[in-house]
Length: 575
Image 1 (cartoon, rainbow, N blue to C red):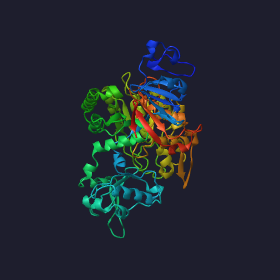
Image 2: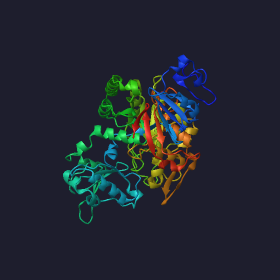
Image 3: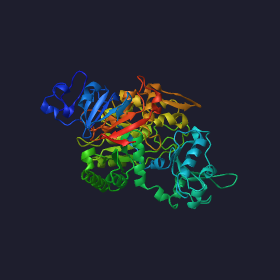
Image 4: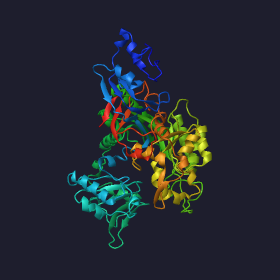
């Protein structure tokens, strides 16, 4: 018996269970090989494996795929103890890999209320009332992700919250994390008044008629709540991490490139056996006068995590579940607040002065120091000038052979010349589709003008220039649901002049391209490229069962599909 060599015309791959001929023709000695633990049959399997792109069955042994192919060939592999799932023709895809999340930062949406993508304010209030009814009096209600621009464009008020949750302090961030909406009880607990001193850049919105706080707190003013009784417990990162992981599993996510940086919270969830996804974690690196020591400290943290994970038996059974993989830096802000670094002035505010978060020469030094310490680097760069600075820094810094790819996060505006540089430098483009569909008509056109719009959210240009494109959500600034994000790449619609319509369709992706960007492309950014990312013989059996069979021509309706089951290393982790 020769593992991973069997390949009949049907493209069946038997892996360690393979015989040199059909399974039924195996010798008696070979037939004593243990039968699979799990077999899935009668499915529409999108493997993201170019050697067997479509299958209808697969088998799993000891947490790994051991056969991928046809039901007629895989069904006979079952033994007395094999669990058999008849999928009834529905679609199955690999476990989804979110290329950019903030799991703990968004945990309030998992533990509290999630108002994202909801246009009706009455529906907001219904959800909040329902949450309040489920909690004891005095328990904080967090989360939010509300967007008043989807509704009537009018900011909500504390009185609205008071009407549905008078006995629970409520503090809900908006979709961009630049403002919070609070009720009267939360404001009183925090000791905030109209006369409270506000940190620079912040503002308490006041009712011009009464002079009292409306319930909306902008930027730095959100920090006025930090000392409120009970809020720290409500924001417990361990509980938040658990809830975020459960939410991710319910959406078919089995792995994430996370930017939260809270190592201890994830380690506690891991040690308790509750980390039911693989997390490639980033640690934040800021400007420092002693870069060598700064990265030595980060390296020590990376080793601490690796040692803890390696010593746990879960790693042998499930594969690596948690690893510090890269350092995260930020060079600029965002388009919405005119803080992204642009090559030309903002169309709607040409006098805006944008200050980089890291000076150019120091960015170069930081990237070089990170590489010297063995860290790949991920840099937040949204404006085209910011992207250019980061590409310059990568171009000037040597890398160790075998180090995972450096990457730039977001890349909301980029020039064609710099698009070409990604491939020549081997830099990955980490992009979040929903940022385009939600925001182009909301404010992006105003910020950059229509002349520069072809340089915005250039997914197709990235692929056509042979760049490595990895897709993600940037949750909680956009939906965690990968099916919404993938659907966004197919239709590229946004609200322009009050009408939702496609724009720049030339930058759309195919379903196969987008699915690759949400699976194997993310795996390829890590040491796990040969372990996860596709339904392939030898890889960990991370897969997702959908509620229906996907049509031959997959369109925006994809965002309405549901996940019925999520598996990690052959174990069902949702529901």
